[in-house]
Length: 406
Image (cartoon, rainbow, N blue to C red; front, side):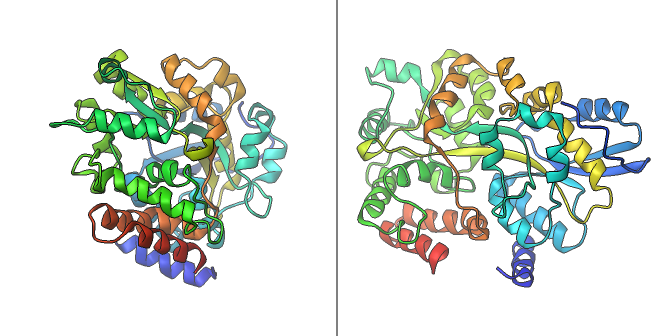
């Protein structure tokens, strides 16, 4: 996508281990850093204070930006670049990468990463997932999660149902646990809900390769997914518009038996449900295929910034040693460092186990500017219409195929 076209598109969308001492930042430097945490009460103030004490020439201005299912945060980030008012550093996701590169928004980090002692505490596989299409490194991983299936273990036991490992068991359980003001599955049809769809459509045989969204297998998998709501009615009526807050609140209130999210919501759910809540990998589709989203979280340094070395010091601090553990205690996700993972006690063991067991199913979405538009607008708008019976499931998939491949 040409840079000027990308910028016009963004404007339209927007209006709807400590690092090496080698890099020398200017003294008295102010670094603006954008972040988002699921927990609205979590604050990075203690980390900022610790960093500033160790780096007296640098001050951090931490700015919490509303997440809004990702769309709000993304729109503000892209708009800030267009307005030449980007932060010096910000939390980012892989789905942003190609759009930000297309906008010439990111500073390459290779010279600092290569010289950074903290680099080896992050697995090579993690670095590989975060490389840019040109092979350079523009992101520093800071947190991660793997999506899995939350289940009301007590309801499954009462109904003598197995925790689902495949689509058939999932559907049987969802139907058996639906009745009155209780539904089998808390489907997220609003912002961020593409991760729910992907576990069933991609796990059922669809792919993002050219033609891969409209094969007979892909169409059948999507019909099955839409049928969960339209035919079997195992979703709450609000599901087509529900976002993160709604699906978690429904589970906490005892309205749903299952939903898909990650370890970041474990503490909140345990606080409401105690030992009744458990997690397992998302069910596998026909032939044993499975798919779940790798929930990445990184920091990047922005090219507009005048103090990129100082910004690097800050983001590398957050991805090293004890600071990375503290950061993930705030974010509710998992440390990217091997040392932090060995010492991690931030979540009950059953959710860590479910995360580990889900790694073989872990995958990422295409690194394309089209993915950003698909997750923010095309997927939720098209899926909502399909779930409400305003378009057919096969047409939904044809819309997705045209979006990615013309």
